[in-house]
Image 1 (cartoon, rainbow, N blue to C red):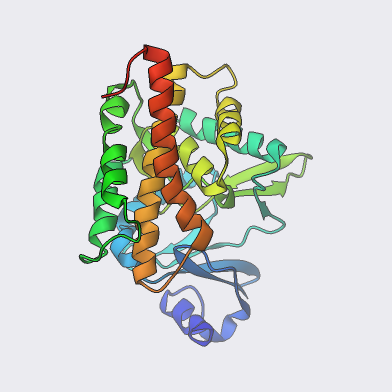
Image 2: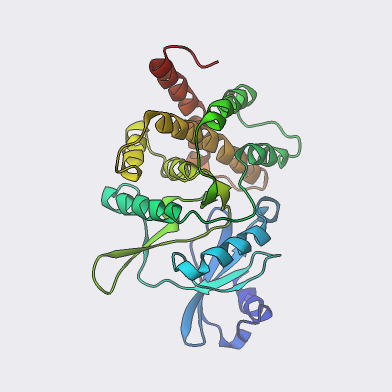
Length: 303
């Protein structure tokens, strides 16, 4: 595959294949393959969508998001984007590292950056519908049963949380959706300190900003104490308990969502191991946590 990348870059009209130098495959992500290269006096990354991605990502929507955020300088600089194939060429961000989810100083900076992004209240035409996506990812199994014998019961339990989520106040706006530690890039700023870029907007769409907090938690595979610590880092002024309950619901829903996503990838021959198992555990664990906390708060069972 690597040998064909220079020709692919040329087909994008970015530069001639012979101008591509230092081509190197980067760490393969969960959704795409990426390669770094030098050309035209700079260093760049070309992203090539991975197996089954065309069924899960609407690239025209991702393209629309990049058009909205481009003037803000909060993400990578994109030089080429094909809204049909999803092939993207962007500047290579030098001297960066992804957020270490066990470094709470970095995590606090990520939450500050996320809160700042949410504060812009950006808008796009499309949404990220959690409930539709859960069913859609399941439909990609093509009739095969879940790997989990209690899947139907777990799904029914998670879907029951929708009534509580829908009843809570929320502001619908552009959200990242994949706001995970790996998508926060740190670099040293010229004036000292750290700057942060938030990359990879392919799942982004209109949603409740509080969902982005849950997404960070489930990818970092935090336990409950860590999850609460993250919530408190985002809500520096204090988190209302009803909002915390809603985020617990989002953790459960996100767990089922990505578990279904992982099951589709499993059918494509890609196994995410512990990550996949933990997502399903989140669906069950945080449904139970929500029910327990709801009973304590309201003095009655959630029915």
